[in-house]
Image (cartoon, rainbow, N blue to C red; front, side, top):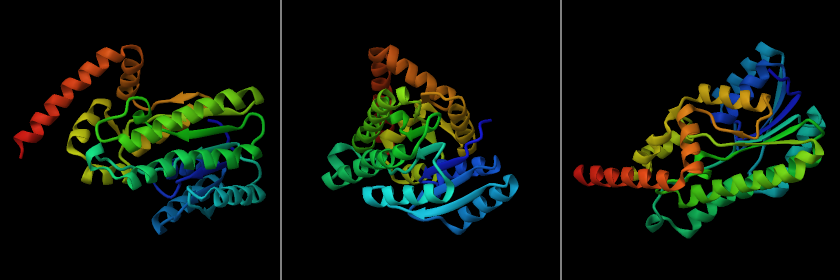
Length: 271
């Protein structure tokens, strides 16, 4: 286990960001939680983890789409806890709708939060980072393969993968590590909301890459960060999906097209 002296984590009020923040506090890290809000329940979990590991945490309110506020909050966090050894962006949203049902405003919103927000965070954090520090962006399996109903989400996450790839080229020669995290479905509050209202064909196809609970995903992601890995894909089925998509794209597409037909037939049979 690596000791991350100070970790900046966006979206750490819930989901993967919260789970990783809790684990780092148990190691004795100082953690800056950057989010729109932190609930009483999440605050209690962070406080308990800090007591268990003699860590410290602070909350700085940000809107990830506001570049100036992100920059100011990161600078404030650094003044309090020092340069970040780890900077992790896990802030994100999802709108699961087919293109015919998706508005331009919804598309812009998803891209603004997921892709522009990743850039805002990276641009704010990197000037404060020293050699051997690591910047990590949470993309998604949707940034490698996309899915039905993922015009906005998939496009934004493909963009995050591209951004992380460029940052790797630019910053790893300077001694700053870059990680791109591409999980499949993780049962976070965001995904639970998607499963309640998302496109039914999309939800059926998502089963291909499997599903992980938050604790398992956080453990695997943090192990990848500790090991200094570039691409981190938690879960065996997600790894297999990414492998097939990369090395056998035509076969993978034909397989997915077959699943799509079955999903459409299943949907029509139930209506």
